[in-house]
Image 1: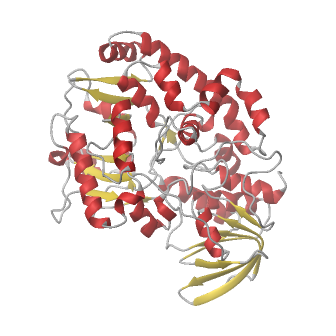
Image 2: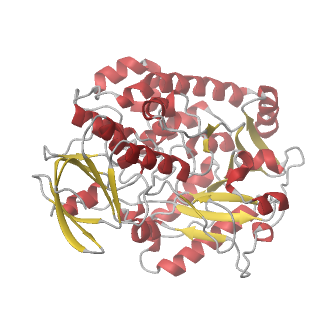
Length: 506
């Protein structure tokens, strides 16, 4: 039986809401989390996606970079984030660009084979030395009250401010690098989950790029051992252990600025009140719950989950598939290819050669596979397709999803030595272990307006001094999800910041 009044009612049981619940409960606050689904975790979940196949896929979100070590330590979160040795591999004709974090000589040789010289390697090292310095300076501020623009500019320094915060990242990359492949590898971080032209003066791509390179002060993209569900499951356990009440199958249907929340479950409608309401939902959903309106954002990705019977063969004789697929494997993501795909999607067309990237989680964390699959050499593979805005899937969701999937698989086949479908595992019922999700699917299945994985366009990590970036137009209501300033990705940062706003920064 639920109480009628709480210190905090958290609407939405995704990982950010669970972070907020854990902090607040540990501080002695009475907390209720309302989650409309029958499980917590939001998009940070693991699932057995294919009947009879013992593979726990990180079905939606899949890597961790932005989760601060401080949050992990503060809460005692028992999760292992495993480093990837290989950053990326990009096939180019019969060779490819391999970035090996543990072998600078091999990386240098790969750059020389692909670019024909050493200039782009030197530029690469200078550029990422700059982003590393920015990461080390900016990451700690994400868990503090906001700095204003001037303070942030002074913190990062003149060169980095000019190159990352003032000028379109596409222009910067074009000036610093000569090779089309290298330019594309750099620019993908500016386009993940973001439909943008990197040369556009809006600097939307810059904001996306920044969040992809500053995570936890290093920008490393790590693998959560046990799958993404280990992160959200661990947070839920911590919140419950601290005293938080978590109600699943409980969908909020209205929020009043006074702190009153109406929700519906199997038993009917109920009303609870909170001294504060923390909204772990997209801003467009919060507006609807408040009886207001806000335009829905537009997501722009195709997510494909697969289980393979074996890794596919490469055209490159110098790189083993295990190395190529242990990091991010780039598919037709050269600078010109990215621009062409963006132009086609902007015209309402599914790109003819969709850019995408894939990664095999099981190569870093075999525990997500059952023993029989491990023994047979099976692997998971997750694909993230760029420049697939929701507008492409509105009129014919199923048909356009199938066309986008077929075009994307063909794009992948173009850079492999064999068709990827030849490597797909079959489930016991004979079906291929392959599923695709578009922004419209995420809108319908996960309740994300426009299927936007960041809830809305990312914002700069600075703003009104002294605020936490979670405030709304209503004193009792705070945003604690990805749509907050400094939100996006699996980070827990908005959850932490909303909790700090409630606790007065303690």
